Length: 166
Image 1: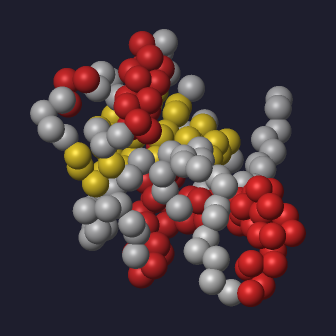
Image 2: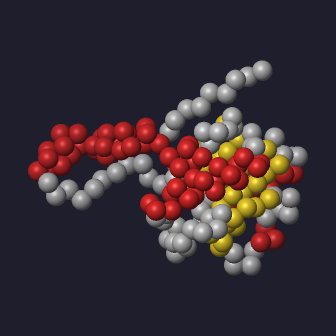
Image 3: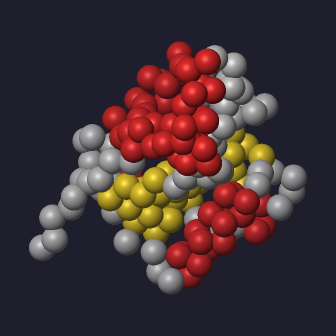
């Protein structure tokens, strides 16, 4: 099976990268082909923690390496480069750890690969309450307000792809 992980930083940065390294190493030990497609290098001299059989492809041209935010002007570029790269690999499964979901969805329209989207961070959203409408909304719904507020946004991020089983 061919697996592709989509990352912002590689091979280190935080917990997502640590878990991905661990999973990728184990998957190649079990005989799977694993490739990590990433945007920015973060090393610190621990490259030896990644099994040499794990392939890596860096998409060059992304400018904001400090905090990992992708500028709106670069999303089209990322989509095009990601599509080209995935077409070369033709993965069975793509695991999106950190790239913008809508960009990945558009890049994968040409593929019959399964897509797994990972959500990192806290789902509950509590904004700075400044307007009367917000005060009323959060007063009426209480602790559930953050979940109610975020549900439409999160629902839009998670689409389901059906793959035919032969």
